[in-house]
Length: 192
Image 1 (tube, rainbow, N blue to C red):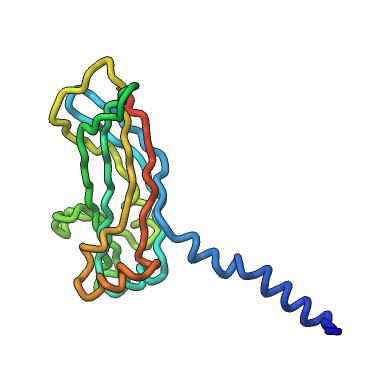
Image 2: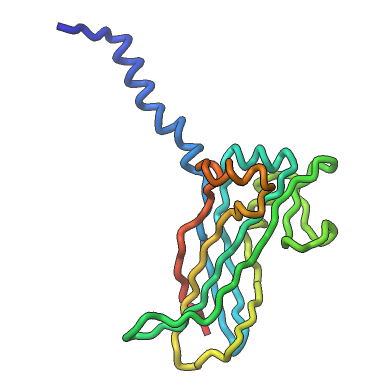
């Protein structure tokens, strides 16, 4: 008959109880779509919204070492139809970049093709992630006029673009969960 000492039982209980706390930082990292407000005029879709962006320690370390990351905001506009599948009207991929400038100690956020002077700078990573995850009145052109009597929806997600990483880092990023930062697709009704 095995005898369990009270000290070992308490230690096992303590360790088992702390496992979720130790794993929580790894589980907390990831991307999520916050609130999106799409509004359409005849040929323009205006999008306001925010995304909750949380990086893993490996991605934060890479940024701190000067490796920029690109996020892709995927947006798909659909016309809703009652009897058959919804018609895709237009797709947009908005790209934004986060980088770290070691000399100034600043995090830079901006469009992928933006010159450094056109980027916003932040002293902390959290401030930079907040700005990176904010879409403020982004105007997107639509090729065709939207029907006044139709209902439209916008599907949205955000993802880390692994293909934009340096080529030597890509195999590691594809095989590591630390680099798999994607949100789920969310659907939002387009206001007219």
